Length: 188
Image (cartoon, rainbow, N blue to C red):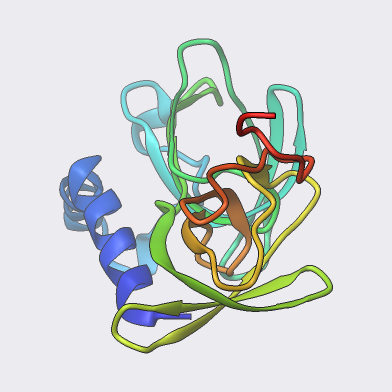
């Protein structure tokens, strides 16, 4: 996994969503001894939202459970007005703004990593893709991966994947005449 791409994706997500400003504001209002828990508010909790950072543990409809970095679990509610950005699935690291009433204003997960290159190996549910610069990237294929094609070794692939290496979407150019069932789409 290319950690530079992961760090860049997370930094871009933070800057684009304004988290740096939110974090700076939240920290400037407290001392190290007074940092509130994610759902505990100053002034009785009536006038400000809280910043929550952690990993998604459970997702059941609009009720999600987030495990904070220090280990405690927090339940949050998402609504139709919640802004969702990035990859949001169990196991992913997130940043969220939670309103005083416990509903989530915005939740942001990591941005997908884009890679392209030649498929040089397939073993079970793993593809080995060689990027243009010669870097080999291992990509995990799962049942929920959106497969535009079923590639073969030698095909050029374009893959969108999560930072942990799970493919979200696989497209290919060498496989342009085969559909996801592997049958020909060309003239008969």
